[in-house]
Length: 339
Image 1 (cartoon, rainbow, N blue to C red):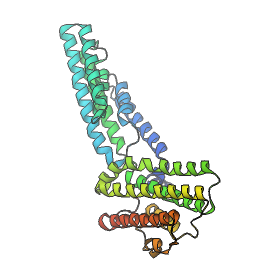
Image 2: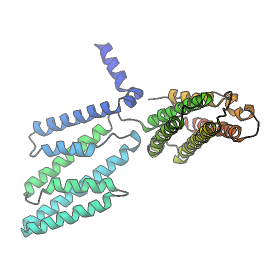
Image 3: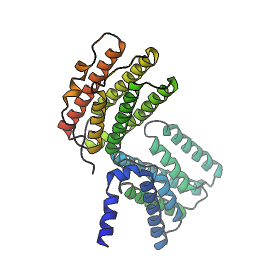
């Protein structure tokens, strides 16, 4: 029994497994949140308890990284509070004036105002506020008693969703490291393929498109990674830029080889450099010194021509990228061991 419990605990706290099975973990998190909401509202017989469950689904949203959960939690809380208070105000004015058309017009105006602000900064707050207004006030035909209970249900659902948002979250810093490592390994594979030559231009374009596709998600993770690690975003932006420059160099080299039929010749250390950095990012250990990476641009064929020049440039770019990773490790302990 203890052995089963230990294995289960190891699985739950294995960051790599949570990264690989992110959707499964999120699905389990949402399922348990719903069960808690149903048990709580049904167990103590809270009126309109289904709205707490609906709120759980609305608030818990998509999979959140640990680095932006606090910001999202604050946005959820503020949006829910604003929406609940506005919804109650709509019910009160409907009870006082008894004018449904006025209530409909006010609700449309309020939701339109929220929709206006839902596009841009603070959009999540505006969206949740509009949803909560409708949940609380309905179409204005709710009595104050029901509106108050719906407001309570909304807050119960929000609280449950926030608690489960912090349960076994995905770490953006881990995702960033693994994705960057995958990009570097894919770049090494492209460089290896260049040694023998691509079958045709279509294969070359597909390979370079794959590298570009792998690079794009990294930028979206940077704000969350910076919050998790306390490292300035500019540090990661530099590495992002270096990776983009390396991909551009590979693309130019592939185009030159495809057009001229020339080959770079013996690998001067470019592929080992890419694989060394990838392994360091995956294991969470700082890269070991490797002179072949830093001096690759001096070892390559020095004959004139665009291909040797681009190879020297790529070797230099990789050396600078490695230096930035070394600096992250020395100053901030990054890359670091997976939690």
